[in-house]
Length: 133
Image 1 (cartoon, rainbow, N blue to C red):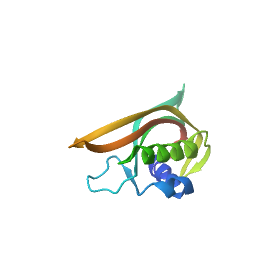
Image 2: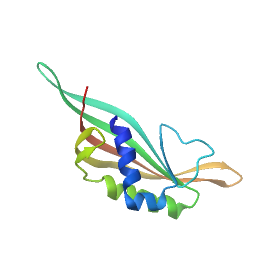
Image 3: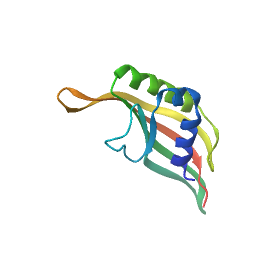
Image 4: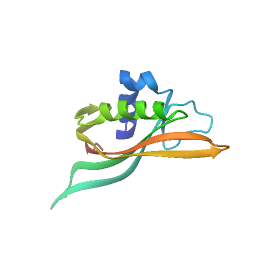
């Protein structure tokens, strides 16, 4: 399982996240998805190299979006996700994580018409991940 799949499974198993999130997704959230929801997607990957080639570690930047119709629910979910990932190191699915850091966090609103929309807490997570073949 790739790092993102392990991260989604880890978040789904976290009691505080599961208490708020109705659904967890990869890459995109379907329009009919229940909210509050969590979206996990990889933004970039930088790999470490030595003179003789790759060393097997990657710096993975992942965006996690916590969306809800109510801004308080989005914030509650964002706080739960941040607490779950910030400073984590250890196994995550089949990946070994040397450390997860919350690099950036922002509040957003996506209007869907007639004054309705989704409030979103979006954060970028930097993870130092051991890549397996």
